[in-house]
View 1 (cartoon, rainbow, N blue to C red):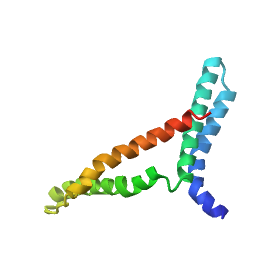
View 2: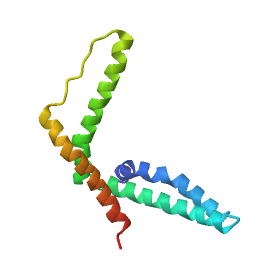
View 3: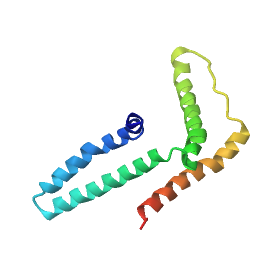
View 4: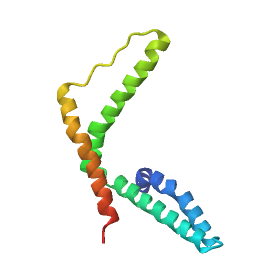
Length: 131
């Protein structure tokens, strides 16, 4: 079970451990109050980013996460395919084409993608201003 937990959150924790240790070291070694304050601000920024990343990784089934997986990821893959084909076609003399997304999906994406972005922003705002 601990292997699974470390797999799901270990990357998040490891990503912030080194920079946080460095920021704490800089705070301890600060020669004046300006350096100490700058280090404390960096520590606060890193801790906030870590907390958001941990909250996101622990909430696997949130509406915004599912929306990202079902809407944003496929659109990203589609755009990547469009760009890849536009680069490969002239280089290799091919005539590949990428089909357009059906109009009903475009219409849904015009509502869902901004909703996902607003949901992420609202969740981030709520975490920052919690008690």
